[in-house]
Image 1 (tube, one colour):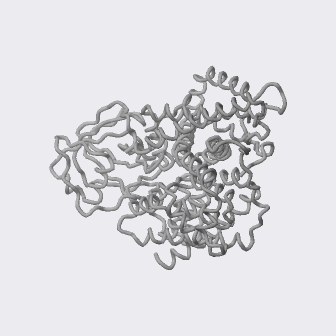
Image 2: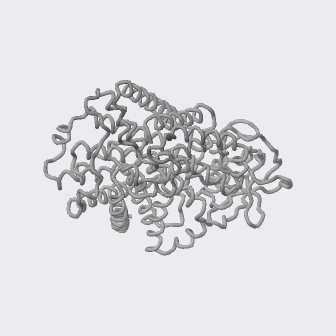
Image 3: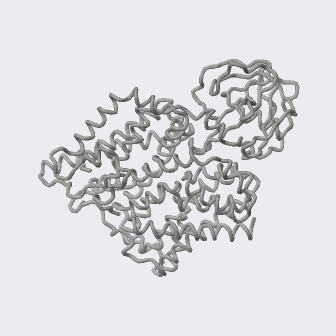
Length: 235
Length: 338
């Protein structure tokens, strides 16, 4: 690969990273906290591209091009993530990934005591928070309260309907679902991947995820309403 | 540090690279421009073609592995350029023990100060070798840095709350494996397995020019291989069903091997792998320790990058040996302490 082509590839890659991290798109792939590092990496890539062009043009003017030692052809592959980020920009992981992965509640250890729910009726809490309060605290910290959970619809093989949210530790390669079964309200007509807000109360019902035998709590739902896809799809 | 340009175009090289012939007036730049236009025109069709759920999942995981790794790779590349240009070789001669066998554990422990994951340590270890550090010590650093630095240990402590002995076991087993590999290289390693420590032609250029040339050179060498590794990891991530893995969790020996292989295959960043290990609750702690010791030292993405930086004949020997040593180290430490 010639120097000029290298500069173009680096510029494209840096630009793709910058565009992804300056908009909300990056939230489909990585955690929020990575954003400043992504921006810095994008700026650095563009700077390396500009410097490469600068020195190459200067060398040409002095008529001793460095192009006697091209870099490996495999570096052309760096265009693949550019295509992926700028042209395809795939959406966040959803029900398809959740259906083949066991619920990840086991990764979160039991806390000794759970803080009271936030104010409001219903109290809006993350799906993971509900699941750990329901399983590890047997719902004690949610007694007499209504809660509101937001997630997407996924289904077990036997047709059980889950409110699911993917959680990330780092990037989508380690995304794992947290599943909460919905009982009570009707979930008919809700397709997989439909984003919903469930308002309901704690119920001791639970089941085991057939994939990894991990516990899945349920929520006694009063209402299940469709909502828009949130900007931050992972918890 | 240099890979021969003409031998590295694997079967995965893109169409543009394969069509390019040396000494044709049509250069890579023109083909690149044409390719981009074709892709832009085909964009609606491209989105349709990628709409299948498994393909969608593959693309998300592929893109996110790259996005996650890039800041660390860029950081490592810039740091290695600083070492290559601004740190004189005499510095390493001063700080490292003259005795090679002693330099290996010192370099292994020094890995604790590089706050990054495996993507950063590959170019930095390459810069060490170029700066005259004995390869055995640089390799011990390469293996230990992504596993025992503070960020990784803290994330391990967060993922395994109330189990400080597990964090200590990760530190101990990783350091043990890294130092053992360094000594093994001293005994059996041959210098001609490593690509000669070439570097970009910068004779007579200013320090700034040398700095930017080093950045460009390193990123062009490691970047393409990162993409290869990301694609392989996404493929296996999307293809291997979790049910198969759960089926072997009860078998003590097999489960260690399976999680070690899973670490190789998944290529998760060492700063995140502890959370994945924590969620593999069906497995014994020793098996999960093997996952965390092997992952930062041998994974598809890393081996691909090592191939780019140190050469094929190096990676083909070093990676399998590291796998065996890392599994053994995890099994010993896990059996004794966990």
